[in-house]
Image 1 (tube, rainbow, N blue to C red):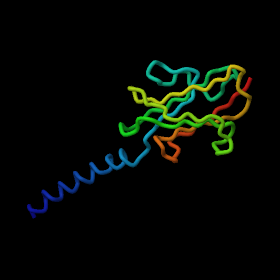
Image 2: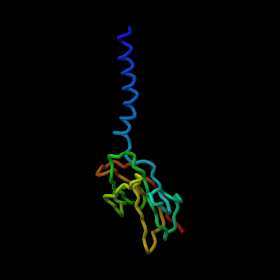
Image 3: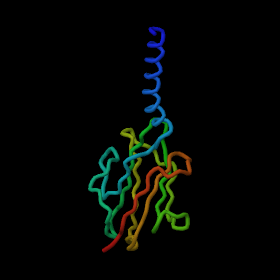
Image 4: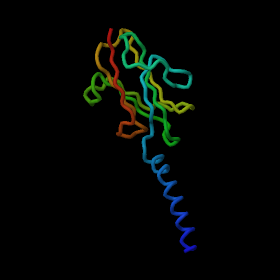
Length: 138
């Protein structure tokens, strides 16, 4: 009976540690995305909103969850997140030292009114990590 206690304890410890390790390596790489009117010096969103005026600068920020991902691709869409709705692709967006990916969308002449979307992909992956929708209206 005593011979089984030590292997049972080791098995339990391995199983308890395997779940967080699995989530770390195979779970989402980028989390907590937000659109906002501004960002702080670390790239963290300030004044988050889902409605913007045509002349506003629109910031998208997302926090990197893992140290394995250092850059991402951000794609802006006019409407739903469909390939034919893409209007701006920002590749090689670097993660800041505070682990935020941040980009800015602006148009000196003002954005058209309507529904917009933004998505971020980790590295060169084809899997969307975060997708956000927002509206531009007067």
